[in-house]
Image (cartoon, rainbow, N blue to C red; front, side, top):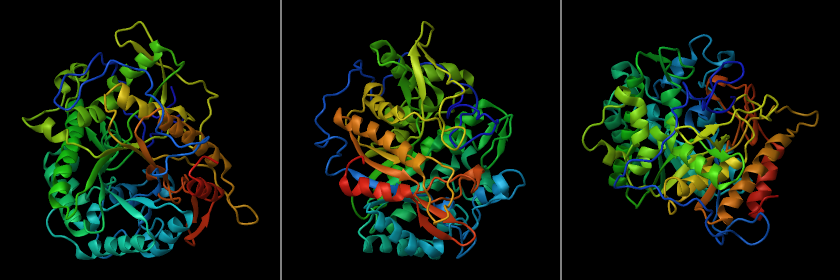
Length: 507
């Protein structure tokens, strides 16, 4: 099976690949004070969408997204110290071509040019992240004023152009100092250190920012950065001895999110809008029958990734079936942990690229995941199978499987790498990106038309950047970056997306 939850064809792991096998099904979640599972599975009534084919609501949010480590560069300037990715990427063989994020897109020095690109695109919302080791270089303790000053300059530049910032507080740049001190996410200590960092950022930038996202993709920096008796492919590249260590590590990240929510709300000078970004797995009924839709609901809450991250954050429980499967390797949960993890959210960020097909089965789980044929279409990376329906079903299942019908959802990342090259005339004709994005937006439109609370879309990414273990070999951007010269060249996809935003419809 070749999808985001398995090995790629060449055996390499990607940032959204799954470590280990699937965890199986879940017959029902344990009851909690936060949520219970509904019984219904029919689409909601339409009426929330805009008029006309492919038209979005007038208040729909259009944006683009980036992450600090992937484009800022200036890795050791103005007081910033190493993140785990700085250390990891310098180890021979860990990143394609030996690439590092030391320079990346040099956004630290070129942010004004990049903000003009956002403004010219016509989007009014920009999702960016703040680098923890730029603000608190040792992960705890002294605050780096020069780091805060950079983000103040950047935010002021965005404000000048009428662009609303949406800040992610952690996008995988764990301070190396905390990895050295206590093993970073392996220790509960990191939850309180992270909350203190969030408090510092909110106090200092909260006069310029209302929209906050605590953590990006818990699954990736836990399951892919730490391997159980095997070497993982992501930073920090630590081998664990037991599954319980991994379960505890995920639990610490969930706990850090909960404490961060509290810290943001306590520190913000204005009423904040607080969310988290999760690349939860999307499951698609192979054929839209009642039986297969029911099977999709079971898979959505029963598979390990969703069951250990999305489900506890939204319901306050890891779920009975998940805990049974983990058994003695379940995380150590202290009194009050689940209440802290299940903080009220103003929205949920959903990073969606691909998914898995499901059908009903006469097994204890009640479903089976279907393997894709070898000829199934992929984008320019082995893990990204072309499944545009994953966006619709990922949004819908928050209502059908988790009962979160009123929780606003933002697509905080969606996009694809394409094999971009400059033509003789200096253009980049990324037609595959346009095809991919158009198909996914059609499914976003379907979700809105059926009444699901999808409120916005952030394209990943504004520009080509450091793509983790793939280095600079994969290009996700709407803007082409010529890395030797740092020249920015808007692609065809940039101009297409500009028309989508201007017309507020799929073109």
